Image (tube, rainbow, N blue to C red):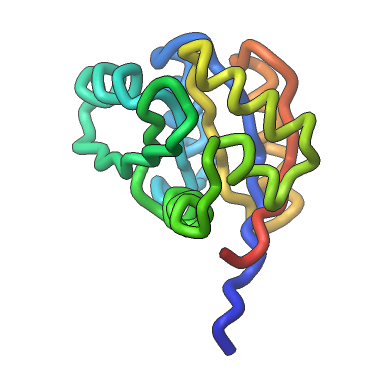
Length: 153
């Protein structure tokens, strides 16, 4: 069977890297694995932000043809799925996200990225993890927090 599983993410939008980093560190401190975090944003923002951290964060470029600036995501299942949408001819981040999200949410995330904000997605596996992730995201993010399912490619 080629169908990939559904991934569930808590999603928060941040104004700056220190809040993203603090959220990730807090959640790792509660027992979450480092591999559950995905970051999405403008390549120029993420390159600078990632270089400030202690980790060697690898980025996947997502060159959607009609987005004004190059978008990137940390390497992982989210980046893989977004890149698959790019290969399927999605012309913007919103159109790629719109494959899974309602149009308004997809546009909100694209607008946040275009404005230089950083989107942190925390992969969820159970209700306790969802509660912890949402509490932490709500405490530091600059916008509302949502939970979204990304199904297959």
